[in-house]
Image (cartoon, rainbow, N blue to C red):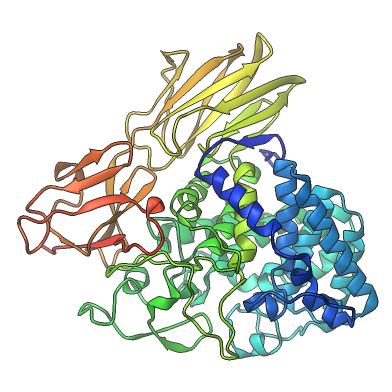
Length: 601
């Protein structure tokens, strides 16, 4: 059922890069979280001694991300071999089990959201740490859920009061880990329970190519595509795979920004036309259609930039997962594109999570500018701040995934999906190989790979040619042009007998391109340089040929990817210029302007 295999978090080494540094920083931050704080709410619920203090914010209200943290520790250990991660994960799981044994409340207090996170975390513990007690934990959690969950809630995915009042939010993400539990254990109760929560409302609409879905919660809708993919792997029913592929196509073609980010104000499939562009406009903007919109809960709410343009950590996690599923199942190169967008323009641009659980919850793409900040200004009704919330559960999952999304294999060779500095070790037909991305810098139009092989051994090496690579793409081996047809959204395939220290050079030239935000707002656009989204230093109304930016925007620093407009293209000042630089390099609390306006002709 799967044409490609990922590396299952082993055999891939991240080399020095911003992603490797991000992973290293995140590991140290999360290892430093006191175990007593992570366990406080469980021990207190179970009536056990609960030393220390609970974490603040969301975690303190129900330890909603405990399962995600367990999963991240397990996968990060598998990726890095850092024993501290395994030690912490096993201790936390053992103590949670002690709480569950002391009181059934530990298991029975979980709604759909927390149950799904715990299920995923314990499955990760079982699969990647071989932690056998996890099977008893997921069995008890599932039996409890089957007894307690309300079956007659609306199944259209609208996040209305009935779902919230019954602690049933995001129920449609349940099938992914339930189908996974069935595949890992063979126990039919997981298969039966998974089928009960199939998200047929959305998946049927996707398969009917019916886009009148209505406003829904963004991250969890894309997350539900992974439920469909896992349902296909568990049952073989193609309707599930079709739903996942159709969902991918609909969102990437109609509902994403230039960064790959989606879900302004966490809302996807909005009814109003031009929603992406509308949500970039401020209240004073004379072109704005209205001051309110219908949100994913079904209510009319005012537009507010505190909600941001993309819930970065969570949205990236959903994208990384569905891209991985579709690459493995179909083998199609195009399914690496969205992951690349979010790797470069999403998570790479995030500041580190701090020790108090502050995270950049949202990225802002507004026409009137934004800053990167760890401060979330939405006070909860009970007075709690947004600390240690959902994004602090998904971000360590993101960084654990970095090494697992670069390379794939089949019986004939290896596939390079992402171009992060890294090294993969693998076997083909019993022969050992290593493929090392030894390029300089994090992002470059030219990538160099070194092959390590047992002399005279044949192997196929395939490189994903990204959608943005529309120029003259070249692949050289030991300086010789291979003359391959390297077309966007395909694999460029090299097959030969490799020798030790053969060098492959991939040249995919970057070019400038303005990408309008949507069809209804063609005058609002973001400037891209190859895969990199650039941001301006000032709010702008530009007067230039959008189709040919290279004619009036020039590079002033190739290494830093800095660009500047020629005089005469910034309204209404003929002497003014604007400087553009990569969004991912912009530091905390510095204003940037990703989407700019064009003078309408």
